[in-house]
Image 1 (spheres, helix red, strand yellow):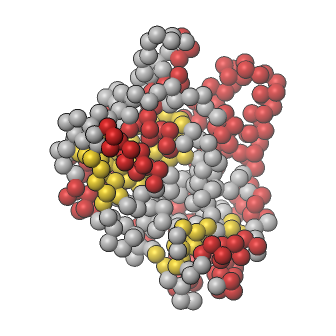
Image 2 (cartoon, one colour):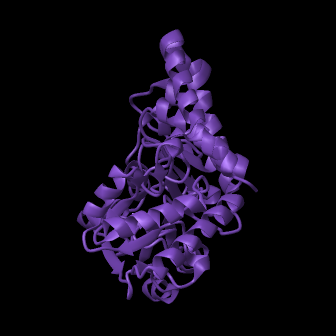
Amino acid sequence: MDLTEYRKEFPILQKKIYLNTCSLGALSLRSRRYVQTFLDQWDEYGASAWYSIWLNECASVRSLLAQLLNADESEIALGHSISTLLGSIASCFSFEDRNEVIVTELDFPTANYQWLAKWFNGASITVLHSDNRISIPLERYASAISEKTAAVSTSSVFFTSGAIQDIAAINDAARKKGAVCIIDAYQSVGQIPIDIRTMNIDILLSGGLKWLLGGPGITFACVRKDLITTLKPTMVGWFGAKNQFAFNAEYFEPAEEARRFETGTPSVASVAAFKGGLEIILEIGVENIRTAASALIEELIILLQKYGFELLITDNPDERAAIVMIKHPNPAAAVSELQKRNIIVDYRKEYIRVSPYFYNTSEEIETFVETLQEVT
């Protein structure tokens, strides 16, 4: 599938070499149009747009996400950030009979902070460590999970190495011990196929910021249908109420679907932008995106290794997401110099982080590596 036609959908690509999707996806013309439509509706209808348009747009986005993940719309909850949604989900755990939570040192801090703060509620946190700063062996999870484990919380793709985890196997190991598995898939959904049915995932969280091209302020949780009503959040909001428009200030009953994990009024502008990104991802197909991005990643790795750059990547190409970490003596300065030359990448600690996507080209990869040599 030739994806170069989609380049004209992203104006930034006409001005810059954009290799930073794992931080923020490029803005599409479609998302821009949908946000403008939201602004026009706000101006035309005022508050009445909620009932006639905007609540339906939220439902439309839940439906698109269900299609993307092979889920049911009732299993999707929308949020403002991973912190908010994970906070609602984490509030379901009492840490009485089961007080252990397992996380890893490679996970994004916001997920781990949610559980580390539960120490005040009696939780015991086990942090699994990596031998190579790239990945965590599956057997390490299996050894750590016990009958005392309440939850296993980890990432689908590690944000500082791009290593893909076998989340189905981790989820299976947790379920065998009666624990709930919670997957932060912010760095995978969109670029890597995920089917929550065949993978039998308990809870998955992600959002629009990165690979789904929806921008900030919109996230989602996908919660397995038969698990929803067993989880009773104590961090709640009026959008999570069963009859939210009854406005009953004396009684709270959570929604029967995953919407119980939603909290306050959603950001409709973010929902609009997210819809544009989701439509593009679904049009192309995640399998096609994976094929295109993987080819670019392998080209990038070959070129970087040819010129002697030290990389932090997994050895198995099948376990590589579209993220490459390049060791550099001064990554902040290099990223700044590259930006002056209209090449956008990022850095984490002592590494430059590069993340090509389906809208990038081999020529851009070559230009980036050549320019990186000049500024190093």
